Image 1: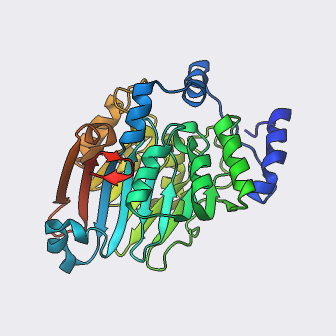
Image 2: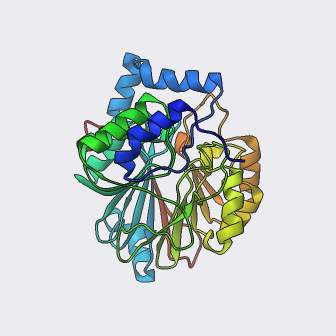
Length: 359
C-alpha cells in the first residue's frame, strides 16, 4: 500500500534533490522504536570516553578476504603474504563494531568502499585505507541511511577523492545523513541513485563485474530502510562475493523471486549483523556460500548474531567468520583454502593499527 509523504519528508526530498540529481518518486523514511532512536542519538551526539576514544584511534581490526582466481597462484598465495593481491579481488571487512564497512581493491588497483560504519568509525577506516595507500576511492556505496552504515561517511567524503557515489532512493532525518549530503554537495561528488535488476551494474573494473541486485524499483518496502539496502554481487572469473547491507527477509524474497539464478556466491556478507530478520533459510539455500562474514560489535545490545541465524548457518555447513571474534587478539594471521580444488583463498587478518602503521 502506498504511504502518504509527510510535509517533513517532502522538505527533506527537496533539500536532497540537487544531490541525488533526480526527483524522488517515493521517499523512504526510517521507522524506529524510541529505544532505537535513543541508541542512535547517543552514538552520534555523546562524546566517547577517553578509553574508548583511545582504543578507536589506536586500533582497527581487519577481516580480509583475498580472492585469487588463477590456480597457478594458489600455492604461492598460501605461502606468501606478498602475493595476497597479486591477481585477485581484495576485500577487507573492517571491524567498526556494531556496523559495516568493507574496502575492496580490484586486480588493476581500482578501489571501492561499501558503507562507513558508525560516527566513531573513521579512524578505523582511515587506518586500513592508509595501510593500502589509498588516496582516492573510485566507487563508494552507501547501502542505506542508517548511522551504523554511514555514520562516518562525511569524513570519508571530506578526506578522500571520490569517483562516483551510489545510494538508494531513501533518506533519513539523522544528523549523520544531513552531514553526508552536505559534504557530497560541497565537493560536487558525482552521485547516483541506484536500483537493482538483472541488468544493473556498477562500472568499476573491466575484469570485475559488480551487479546490483536490490532494491528493486516499484517494490513496496513499507518504509523499511533495511530492506532498501543496496545489495551488490562482485564477480571475478568464476568466484563471487555477495554484500547485502541490512537487507531483511522481504528484500531476500524479492531477490529470490526475480533473480534467484544470480544469487549464488562463494562468500556472503550476512545481512543485518546476523539478525534473525535476515538470512532466511530460502535465501541461504539460494546463495549456497562456502564462507560467510558477520560484521558486528562484541557484546552488542541487540544480541547479534541471533541464535536462529547461527543455527541456519551451521545447518548449511559453511565457514563462519565474525568481526567481533576476530578482533580480539593483538596480532593474528591465518591463511587457508576454503575447499580443496577451489580457485579461491580466504585469508583472515587480525591486527592492531597504531598511528596508521601496520604492526
